[in-house]
Amino acid sequence: MIDVSDHEGIAILTLNHGPVNALDRELLTRIPDTLAAVGEARAVVLTGSGRSFSAGVDLKRVIDGGAVYAESFLPALHRATLALFDHPRPVVGAVNGHALAGGCVLAAACDMRLMSGGSIGLTELAAGVPFPTVCLEVVRHAVGPALDAMVLAAGRLTPAKALSIGLVHELVEPEQLLPAALLRAEELCRAPSDVYALAKRQLHRPTHERIDAARSSDDGEVLRIWGSERTGRILRDYLASLRRG
Image (tube, rainbow, N blue to C red; front, side, top):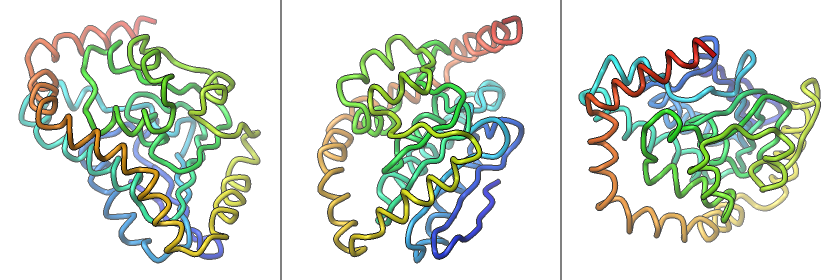
């Protein structure tokens, strides 16, 4: 599900899970485990195989699994997002193609984000599901006031638009994506590792405070809606519309 390679002490993690690296419980569970396994690497580069970084949540699994699946899927999504966000070493996202919904969240959890093509955005409301608190606040950390339009309009952004709002930091040609991401990672490694880790904790503290303040009131409602029969019907209609479109 995740291919691991090494480049001069920098771990390259490549999502390799089906044609579009759709996020299911198993892949999300693998992300924290893999990050822990490469914990001694100087930095991490996260990218995707094929034409997508990750096209988002595997909605068919959500439909088929209903409330029981949602009860384990959403915590796995939270853990994966925070494992990337809080990894103490530099994390560079090499967004090689579409990064939608949960895929956009994983990209936003990286310290630096480079993009070579495709579209990126938060399409949850278009699909008819609410935003988990952890995901919302991690993306808020990345884009600040641009979050409202991203969530409520639920659209797909071009790489140029993503650059303009700070969702990505650099646009590169596809063949230069991985070399550029490795160069960025190398630059971030110039700071001593403990100093870098402390800086991340300081920068991320407001995000964690917002998460802690909102989860008790929001997470139960988010889970209820994700696991409801109504959401299953809405998601079936959404997937059918994508097939027709």
